[in-house]
Amino acid sequence: MHYVIMGCGRVGSSLARTLEDTGHSVAIVDRDESAFRRLPSSFLGRRIVGVGFDRETLIAAGIEEAFAFAAVSSGDNSNILSARVARETYGVERVVARIYDPGRAEIYQRLGIPTVATVRWTADQVLRRIVPQESAAVHHDQSGTLAILEIPVHPAWIGHAYDELEQVTASRVAYVSRLSTGILPRAGLVHQEGDIVHFVVESARRELIEALLSQGPHTDLTNPLAREH
Image (cartoon, rainbow, N blue to C red; front, side):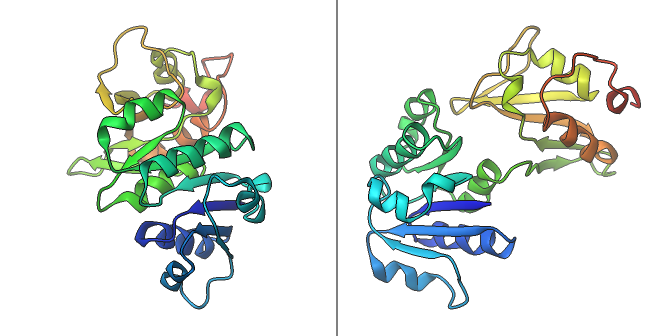
C-alpha cells in the first residue's frame, strides 16, 4: 500500500523507514529539502519539497492512491489542515495528525482527525493508527494468559453497542479512549468514530479476535470463533 507522510523530522523519517521496510511504498513531504538527510541512503520512496496542504504537492506525493496520510510536522495548524485536506478533498480514510498542544486534541478529534501527542513513543502510536489491523499489547498478566490489547475496530461497528462487540468476541472491553478521555464501559455505550478500544483477551485467542474485529458485525452472534470460548 502507499503512504504519504508530511514532515521529515525524527518521527516522520522513522515512520518512512518502518513502512518501507515492511514492503509499503512511501512519499514524504517537507518544506525544507535538507530534512531528507534524516532518511537512509537506501530509502527508495519519493521526497517531495513543499507543504502538506498544497494540492499540487499532495498529488506529486501520490495522495490520490494513498491508503493513509500522517501529518507529523512541527506545526499543529499545518498538521491538522493537511490531514483535513487529505481526508475531505482526496477521501483518504486513515489520517492522523501529531499535536504539540494537547488542549486542541478534542477539537481535532471532533473533526474526525485522530491525534497523537508529542511523546517519545509517537512513531509507534502513529503506526497503530495508519497500518491496518496492527494491534498492540498494553499489558500482560504475569502468566501471559491474559492481555489488554488496543485493537482496531472495523468502521462498520460504528453505532453498535460495546456489549455486542463483547458478545461476538467473547472478550471484555477494558476501556475506551474518546476525545483524549478514558471511558469505562457501561451498558449501552456505543462505538463512535475515533474511539480507541482496549480489550481484555485471552492471549491464545488474540488472532481470532483481531479477525472478528477486522470485519463488520455478524448477524449471527453465535459465530463459531466466539463460541469456542
